[in-house]
Amino acid sequence: MAVNASIFDILGPVMVGPSSSHTAGAAKIANVARRMVDPGFNEVDFYLHGSFAKTYKGHGTNRALVGGVLGYGPDDDRIINAFEYAKEAGLNYKFIETDLGEVHPNTVRMVFKYPDGRNPIDIQGSSIGGGAIVINKIYGNPIEYYAKRPTLFMAYGEQKGVIAFVSNILYSNGYNIHEMKTIKDGDNVMLVCELDEPLIPEALEKIKNGKDFTFIKYID
Image 1 (cartoon, rainbow, N blue to C red):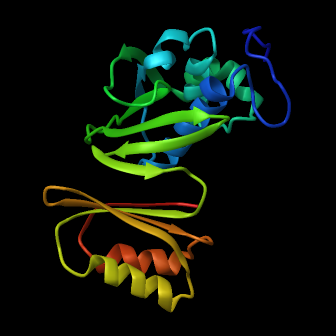
Image 2: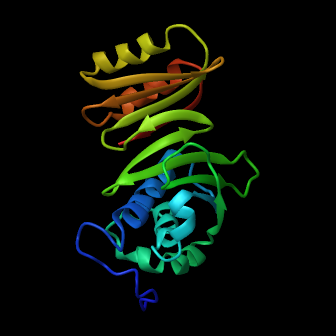
Image 3: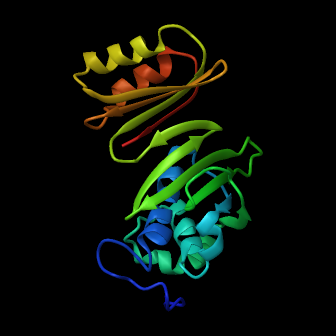
């Protein structure tokens, strides 16, 4: 397939350019978000904030975001033709310039929509420089995830013993918890657990089935 965006050059094995913040970071945000949501989405709305909104066409942020939700990493040269690949995959998308409030200027809110009518999934992330990112909101819950370690995300209504339950399963399977954080919004709780090594499927299934989670997702 011919390259059709001259500014969107390959700068080397690390990333597709031209900007580590506006292209590589954007691709990484969208790629991580894709792994956090349920598969089967056929439409994504990208709400662009700050400098993302001002320069997304010239810096290739739009192509990087579409490529990311297609599963392409920051160094994948398919990002250059992401719009064409999205069409082939039947993926619809929109770019909407907006104000997301007091957040980093390189921030995007992504709304993943499904053909079966289930509730859309909302994830927000920021590109914070040099290709580094932070996912700062999921399902409306504020979090702080830098996509550097295997991580469990668990949301649930206020109930006793969840942290102890998760910790005991991880300990019994020989895992070290690098960091565990809880974020509360009224009676809703988001528990984020970062590990030092990947989680085996058996341990993940025990965690999934042991408590009444409204949302649980593991990113390796």
